[in-house]
Picture 1 (cartoon, one colour):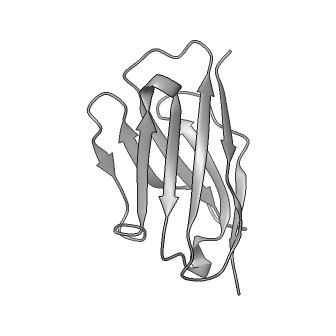
Picture 2 (cartoon, one colour):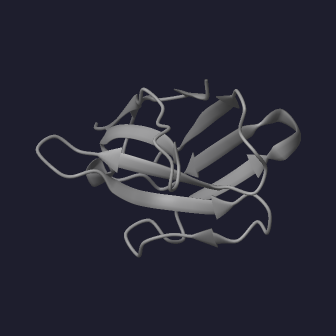
Length: 114
């Protein structure tokens, strides 16, 4: 059984930084695309970053480009999301997800507020 476990969420002031981690365990073959999603209250879940674990290619929506950085450590089966210059609209539950699979983490709450 594949499991994804997020950590690193919390409360941060506007302009601050957080680093989220996603630990992947179980029978996952190499060569997948990992994504970080967030879901704000009353809104749909949206993709905020993705990385191809083979090529290292990354993608971001304009709303986070230049502020968020996704990275990976294939040897440790870990993915990370570095979030800088955070804004109140970054608030939400953040999930990691292996694209094109049914595997999601349980989510970690991120709140940006003064």
